[in-house]
Amino acid sequence: MLARVRVRVEHSIAGIKISRIAKDQFRNTAEGLSDTVMEIACGLHNLRVARRARRHRSSNAYFR
Image (cartoon, rainbow, N blue to C red):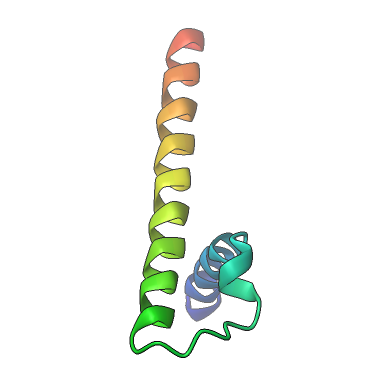
């Protein structure tokens, strides 16, 4: 059960790291900016996953 959760978490982290700013070394030292960048990368990942799920549901409805 732990392995199943771990796989999902690792896939999510990999999806977030598609955004290059999240995987490269962040050199801007402004307070709280690295957290903001990570929040944006996570938001983009969530949007991408939601759009993929919505598109997948709509394409499967045709074949039912």
